[in-house]
Length: 264
Image (cartoon, rainbow, N blue to C red):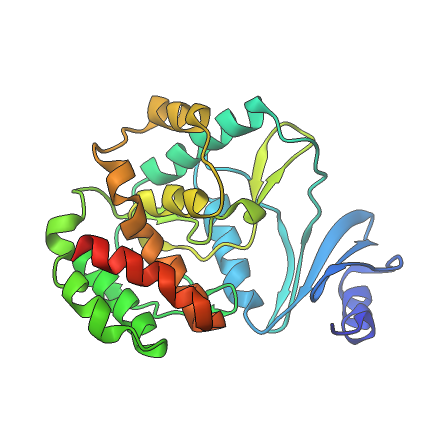
């Protein structure tokens, strides 16, 4: 883990006197500066993350995100979110606000972030959904030796994808990137925003834990859920599964191979 000595003088120069940093894991700290509780993250991709947070913050009715206080090529400072116990109200609010995010007009497929976590991704724009997912998934598949398996599936995207989108999606919405705020609101962090299909975010939540029915009902109160979503869920989970295979290899190949066989 990087030492706080590397970034603390820069923080003080920008924001004034700071307290003693508290490590949160990895290259992330909590610190008080300028009279506010802040989170400091040191990483090569933080400018991309900062742009994603600002993009989400502009979407009316979307889940709140921490404010970007300072963004430099390897240093991101955001406001701290005080967390509480996860509640039914949190889950319902996440459903409604996520639906509001996905309901906002968005003009293009792709674009946005060039990383998801530690994994670089292709941010190219595409004219349609099938083109976008073909570009992104084949590029990832090439890097983990699954291109020959993914190619037949990519050729079928036009028939498999529902007629919806593009929407602005968080893009890396596993449960670890949802904070249950003490203010009763669900906050989102660490986005990988792009123009994608709304079912992407729901599918990623489902990949890393159960999505409560109450969340889906609250979502459907704001935005229509296309028929067949549950059957398509593994298709939209292929993206994060390939990302994990690129990053970690080994046994992570099994799950994307299962998804590929299911749809081919």
